[in-house]
Amino acid sequence: MTKLPDILLVLPLIVPMLTALALLALWDHRRWQQAVSAVGATGLLVAGLVLLSSVWRHGILASQMGNWPAPFGITLVADLFSAIMVVLAGVMGLCTAVYSIANIGVSREQTGYYVLLHFLLMGVCGSFLTGDLFNLYVWFELMLLASFVLIVLGGHRRQLEGGIKYVTLSLLASMVLLAATGMVYGAAGTLNMADLAMRLPQLDRPGLVTTLAMLFLIAFGIKAAIFPLYFWLPASYHTPPAAVSALFAGLLTKVGVYALVRVFTLLFTQEVGYTHSIILVIAGGTMVSGVLGAFAQTDFRRILSFHIISQIGYMVMGLGLYSPAAVAAAIYFIAHNIFAKSNLFLISGLVRQMEGTYRLKRLGGLYASQPLLTVLFLISALSLAGLPPLSGFWGKFGLARAGFAQGQYLIIGVSLLVGLVTLLSMLKIWMYAFWRPRPGRRESRPPLGLWTRVLYLAPIVLLAGLILAMGLAVQPFFLLAERAGEQLFDPGQYMQAVLEAR
Image 1 (cartoon, helix red, strand yellow):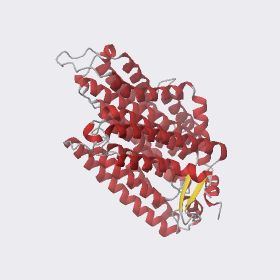
Image 2: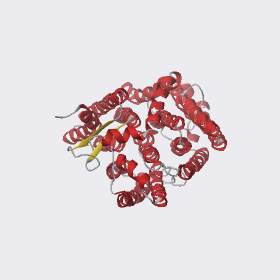
Image 3: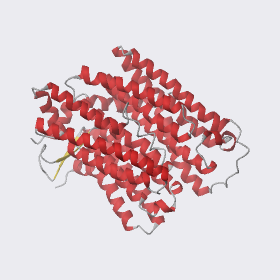
Image 4: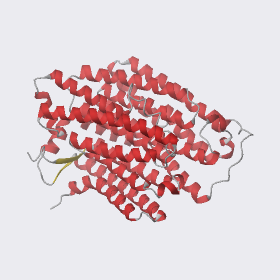
């Protein structure tokens, strides 16, 4: 008899898979594809919320596929951290599905865009819910396949160039991940993460475990775009349509961050003074290099692409500080950044649709002509920079407070300086695109239709509302993040949930 935990854990995988299969059956019916895609994304969000509610009330859920006992079978497991990430994937899936109806265009819709979108969401949720390293690799490969085709879909030269860079570095990361996974199996005889959490501390070769930790840091670091492994991201994320860029900015790099947090709080905790100090240095380098790259750009989306990198540094900072409070702040920051960064990409797409360009020097006058869009931009941009009382402030405040508790004043100073430069780069967009008069030499474009405008604005308004909610009603969101951080620092709960039958 199927148990409720089994259903709740499988639903975030089944819903996008069934949606993708239904979309294949509706290949020649574009309008039906749009509707089914939106309904499927809504179903994924509902499944994620139900899963999160159940984990909050009942604790960590685990299920063994095919009734094979752990660690021999395929394990699905959800703690608060993974359940939060599934909910965030559902939010971004819904926003992207609605926005895509107006943004993607007929040619891409007719060549499988929505099918790829939902297979990508399936891979993302699988990465969050898997309980063993090999299946994490499998879900990563599904994401790689779907995301590569989404980047190059349309066949423009710039997309192909960005897609080649993206897939080359992603394949390199996959090779390192597969090699590291094989070495872990050779050393410990298992790939189940709960079982590994028991066996790795018992190995009498601490040098080997530390080496394996560094290999996983490289593999997941490429996928998370940390310093100095980030150079593929700004060369590729600005090339596809805005809907795809927003989805990638919101989810793909965060899967890499999720994997780093998972393995460096559950598996590789034997040499924290060494491994997590390296992670903290990498966090500082990621912040600085990303924000300096953003400040030098004059293209709306390229600025945002570099800021993906700098914001990843804050998330990795929480892991490097390695305390329940720091990891909780990092989890809160991940949620904030997904909303703020994705929303800025969606706003850039709407600006491109209205003005015909992403180049700041050719933009202007949006403050006067688009007051609602101006407000929505300011909410997202100021939150990204960390101004109170928006969500970005509370995430950075939590990280700084955790850093002060450990006396890590240098990384706190770096994070504050990077926040200031982030504000300056957001002001650059504001001054060029919104505040200054519109350049007189450009021709006016026809206004968007009412329905098209609604489709563009609805996801932007939703994400801006979530940013405000996280900032103005911070306590429940931070409480959830704190509970998730406490679970991560009590791996016994995770091991007991997965290995209970044994």
